[in-house]
View 1 (cartoon, rainbow, N blue to C red):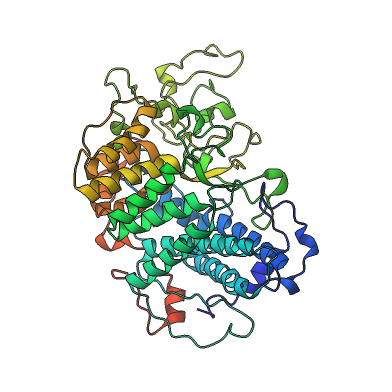
View 2 (spheres, rainbow, N blue to C red; view 1 turned 180 degrees about the vertical axis):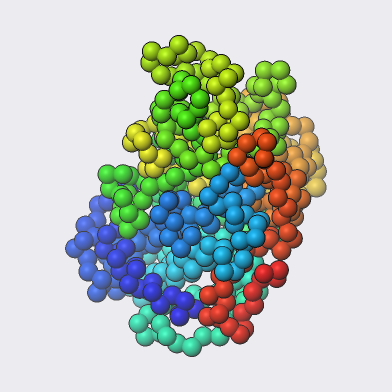
Length: 526
């Protein structure tokens, strides 16, 4: 692995000397700490941890800077499940001919291992460093372990065949010979669980925005347990989060409101335009998710709508919700409206109101002639990433992003208790899932099964980046995608495009296979 990561040392040095994390590491003057003390004392390790957070945030970010195809990789995970219709940009890589070891973007693999390498550097160095307070050392190690576990977990879910390397790259070992072999499923999950168990034991539920905490570690531990069919552990981790009293569901209109650092958010990415502009800076780089899932209403015929952040503002319109997702909200066949509060809280309404001063339709519903069959200009669109204060004329946003929230934990807990007892009417399972439904203003379930959980997860968590993993874990990814995932720019050309069985795992980048030859195989089908 050392040869794969030989460029990371220079990269990371730049990050370390320009980093802090908004709202929780701002008290340190990192520019006064030189690289000569990184990994050598407590202050240096705190700088390293700050740099690690910046790298992790950049690894998950979607931006049109698209380094190493990372944005395409990340958007793929938002757009390649069964709930969307993809119009452009990364559609060629989604279940199509360009999904090959040479053409498929490589950022998730290569930058993932760089991130793991730097997390391992913190984890390895900390035990030999003296800290003023021993508990602070344990917390620092725990935070780094959560980041490492989270990254390994994603790589494993995406590629299946991955390698384990917990020895950090140094100047002394960067060019050591390495024999590369895929790690066993058991070894990968054992490492992830070991990291998370340490974190659970050494982290508090109380953390500043942008800082991993015990709640996030337990949530990840529950997800890993689900892959192992360890329903008892999955249930216990979710129960612990619920019983902690730290989290509660927000009113539906506030979940994705102006401030997402609320009691439902378990972990968030912090962005700040005044402190940002680059992944190496405290405020990070911008995010384009809001633009990706928002049609350009201001381009509609007639000019009745002008660009306005209340209607999404400047946007891209690359992916829109499909008819299948819409059907899950049971809209009225006449009015097109749904009693489910999420239908309007999480999406823009179908009936648009003119907003151009002086226009005959200002403040009034637009005429039917205004609605084109052009998904770039008009479509039922996602408002989960709406930014009311972004700069005019841009789809770039610095609004904080929810990574993990309590509603997802409740749905995980519901599944865990149902599977643990094999009782469709398990009271704890129903209690958890019905908390989510009651918030949405829809009737309680009286029994649940796998399809019930999948459907409710779609209604609650669509376009939040976790659906693809859920479908794969439950063994229904191919069926769901082939039945519902569409591509097109209008109703006249929207169509299914079949997913092949081997596409349940990504192709390992060919240059990495060449580097790891002859002992590391390409994934089957590629």
